[in-house]
Length: 64
Image (cartoon, rainbow, N blue to C red; front, side):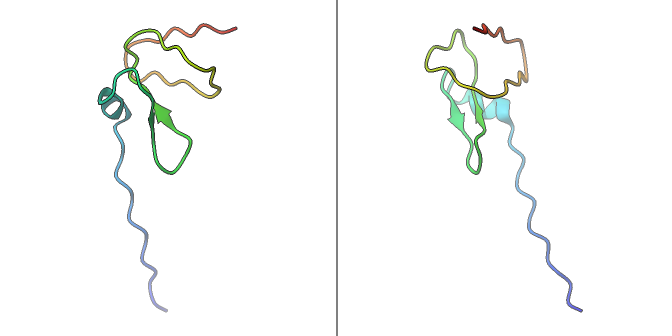
């Protein structure tokens, strides 16, 4: 029986470094609904739903 080849493991993404490229702007990652943001102050804009993961520092979330 022939052996199956395994798909290559994708490269890991360093989310904090990726977001540092455009501080204050959301960066959408391909292949899903994941976005990252380098917080450089208050973020205004439309209300969004989802999870917030703080990789470094701290984030204050003002809930309605």
